Image 1 (cartoon, rainbow, N blue to C red):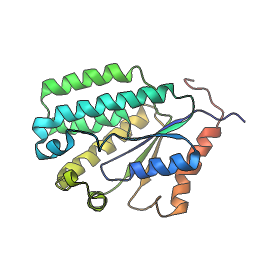
Image 2 (spheres, rainbow, N blue to C red; image 1 turned 135 degrees about the vertical axis):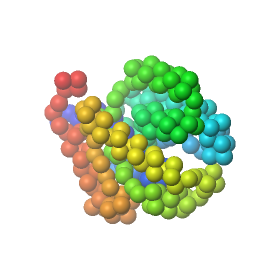
Image 3 (spheres, rainbow, N blue to C red; image 1 turned 45 degrees about the vertical axis):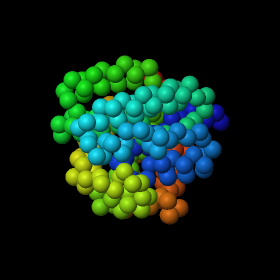
Image 4 (cartoon, rainbow, N blue to C red; image 1 turned 90 degrees about the vertical axis):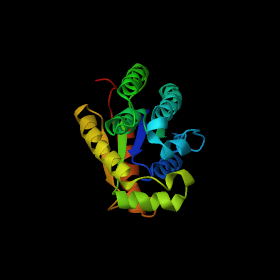
Length: 215
């Protein structure tokens, strides 16, 4: 049986476990993985110190690098899985920064226009896995991984990002994106094989379905 070529996006807030899940699924499925460029981002430390000063620079860096990855995903001949999609840049982070007054109206409009041009050339994910978590759990994971620039993250900022994620996921469903919501407050895919298999078998089922893209 011919398997579908799939593009899976793992979505969720800072510290929720996207990179770990991307790695685990990639290893189990034998798929190419694409990771968010965090450690080599020259703006992150400055951003957490002064969001208003560096928000536009940071978001443009993420967007441009994500576009490079998304173009590779579009051209990749086989299935792949990505740690955070390009949609989250505009729907979650730029949106929240603008709402809080940390990105000007002009910068936000320019950012949205740039995103609209980019995304028109790219492939949409066949499945979004949204990892949902409370702020308390996010903070525990953030402290555990010990990135210096993340130690000052405001819990209220994480809460606002959570709200933006919930609103985006509902819009994505209405826009006919296939979404799995995985509650990290109740499950642990990293340490519980049964929880991990919920996601793994959902992907394998989608991979074997008979369907025609665009229909």
